[in-house]
Image (cartoon, rainbow, N blue to C red):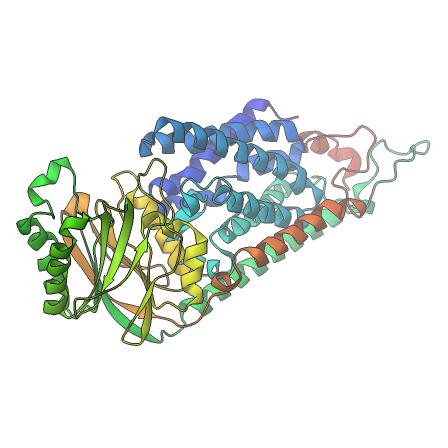
Length: 524
């Protein structure tokens, strides 16, 4: 029986490995082994209580470093700490229930289960929406996750959970050839006189059957990996239907940079008008600012409109401008044509915690530029699939998403934006009033970016390939993946009628060590 300290250490290590990519995207590869230590304990020990204990430590190790780094408000920190800890306790307890049920179906079922709490994670208590996903940092390797245009970002966790479950059986089997492997329901009749207390496993799949399941697990691993890579390759190498050039400007606007106030004529010229003219000279057809880049009251609206209209006519570009409508108390963007006319406006739908202002209704706003449909949303909106999928269903060629981040959240938010671009197969251009202005391709690549905290005010400009196809995720959402996960879980649960991972024995060894200690009696 394994020591509880082993479970605590496995939980702490797992939490830190799960969180590593949230700080630095490329470190997401550490998630490939985050649950493996715990799974090795589970395969050998098969106890739910210690696994849940590991989940408690995993939740603490996963959440607290991020909350310290992000410097969230205390109420938000407390909610997220409790929330993620509960999620990971449940995840680890379910792992202890599912994995031992079958060396192949068990890992598949666990991967399916992990999809579900991640989905719940960013929908049931959606403080930050999809930015809360355990898998968001995998956008550091966009080629590897093109399949999320079918499954959503949570599909990454199905793959991670399944692969680690299969690996845990292979590793445990290599260290102990007599590891209990799925067999038919045991015959619990008393042993005949002279019969070994532990009957020969060879009759019930030990060790011959165990080796067979190890081989089958390896084949399953290779098959799933091949499927994932094939889907990635097909999507990655699709030819675009055209291209658009877009530009996005941003700056840091706070008490430390009041000398470049965009509301003053010199600030407007330096931060908005001059970058717009430069982007136009590079061939840009659209130009966007950051979220709430300007605060505009009713009595000065005509003056502001004249300023923007002059820039639009000078540059012959569409302007998508983020501003705060003081009179209506709404966070908005407006779409201004090259002729200087405001065609439509959109109000932010999903407000962040403690954000002032009135919430929008979520009505889509689109324009047509060079025959291509262009949409718009604001900052936190991109973390919620109702809007992002809706633009995918309209076959949007590009979505503009003015943003306002802060220093500690800017990288995490950009990770989430890249996932949304892949899921719905459209590029996203975001100017940032604080944070990172970026242009992200429909494949999740960063075509251009500027960190305004590090590089100061400026703009980014890039040609973006555009696609007309509607992705399965944009069309159907999470439903197909959730149905597949549900059937996989049902199969694993009812698998009890066919298989049992407990060996056919009467002294009931409960760990790899105990089974191996009986090797001379039961292995031939």
